[in-house]
Amino acid sequence: SKGKRVTDLIEAFNRLMTEAPDTKAELWLLGRAENPADAETIRTAVLNSPVSDRIVDKGFQTDMAAVYAQLSVLVLPAENEAFGRVLI
Image 1: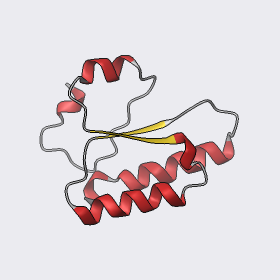
Image 2: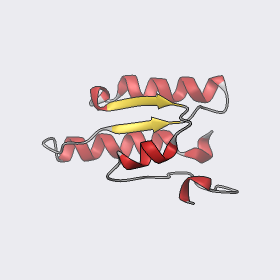
Image 3: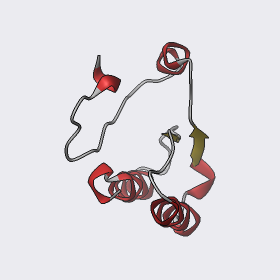
Image 4: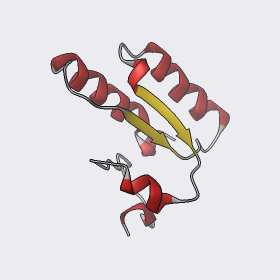
């Protein structure tokens, strides 16, 4: 949904990689879109990204401890999370 702000995160990543192209980074998108329209919006944003080769849709994950162990940075772009379990 718009409140999750995934496309804003993709745009920010695009700017970062454009301004600092030598940065060794990937953007991992985790989880599932809440509805097909949101999934299509996100898919389009990734396809239109000048750095789409650095954006990886990891989908739904069950072993988040293993995912977190691989990260250098975690970004939760959501405007509002009723219960932000990702931060616990």
